[in-house]
Image 1 (tube, protein in one colour):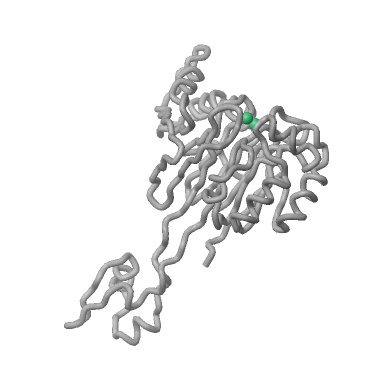
Image 2 (cartoon, helix red, strand yellow):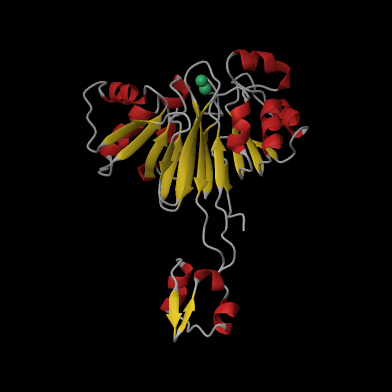
Length: 302
Ligand SMILES: [Zn+2]
Ligand SMILES: [Zn+2]
């Protein structure tokens, strides 16, 4: 799984940073979290393509998080897209998407399906789920968690051999959880598989102040991508506008016991993110400030 930061600025873009968008590539699929203005062009400078996007998750309807959507949909259509696009968001998403698609003379050549995700709501995507939790911002806003389902344990060739199971199709049937017969014996999957292995967990907060529910939501995430609009010196100001300081993001990361913390949505006032990083590092050392096009690999935990 690969996370690519396509926009890391809050409110408006700067020469170095575009507005919010985070792409997660998982297998052939790209999931897009937020789609600030110019996201389609950011894609072109990244290793990913906007044509691979299957689902878009908007955190909220401040312009720096969604204004790139109509342009990207138009380009998808002109590039011959036929498969439907799913767009999720907090309450009001259906109205927003229908308004965006009725601008000008454009009608997409594929279905754009918008769907509200209520706080606590979950989408089952087969091998993984995406869940939302209400963020604390100035308008309705969701934080999202992408969580893979548990995978079967490791197949033990030694144990299979000891049990006299011939290699071949029986192996894959056991691996996929089936009980099989060898001669007059019954072999159960647990006879040859180790303990089930957990999948990966990625949390994207969108715009939010720190709050209690986020702790449980982010618990033991492999990666926490957190609003860090300001450094600690401007914390009060950040909170007044429904944002977090990097220090507060680090507190959440520490208390939730996450693997690594990536800070994003920097206020355009910071030309250099040094103080943002320092303030977080004092609390949680495994932290990084995202730059546009930062790409990180998230390996399976085991
Ligand atoms: Zn924002
Ligand atoms: Zn906002």
